[in-house]
Length: 290
Image (cartoon, rainbow, N blue to C red; front, side, top):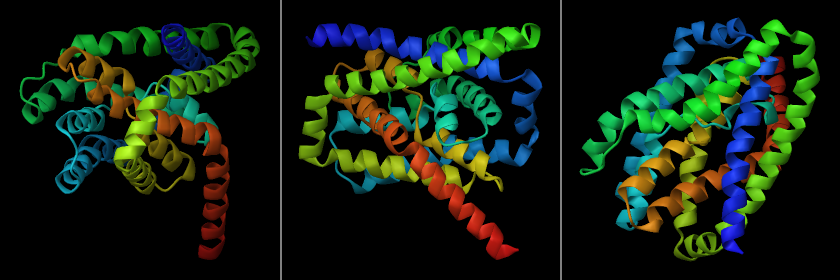
């Protein structure tokens, strides 16, 4: 049964990412994606948040909390891997700036491809990181469908308008299916991490990443929400690639998969409600300041 579920999961996840990226491209233009990235301060804070503050927090957390070596390795890998492929979908759920989410995703992906081969071997001696091996699935599953969507939008706007609601529904179904199948596959791992208390470390890491992203996401609520979810969800594709090619212990992958599933679960079940709460709070703050 697990073999069947694993096969289904391996099919659903890439299809979900491709459809999500296609939908993002169909909804935007290249200037719209570039425009938010002209804000140098916001770009700088996004990079600092994802490549300095989150890894630093993970390092400090591991100095305080006793974890086995494989679990530590998994958390370190995940902390250094930014640029989640589901960012545009999460941005949509929390009513964030979709254009900024696409631009931020590309920016963080490039940062991960450049930084991980340099930083990770310094922290975990013996780990080998190939930039192209990380970039290849990201280019195929994310940038290519995004480019196709942008091309259709630019040349055939009427067709794009027809495809957007279809891809939106397909993306939502894919997210729910991947979550259900993923939790089913990782159920015993989840129980074990609950039993040992490791799940609390995952939650603390997730809450910090979400919070620091929101706090440093600029003055606009829609970009703060995007940076929050873009920081909270790490690049699982890059993390798993490094984990599977460098470590034999399955616990390295366990903490990566479970933490990412926690974020997906949070966004799928509570994302829209959290967005409404934050939106109401922002309105109240603005009214008080006025």
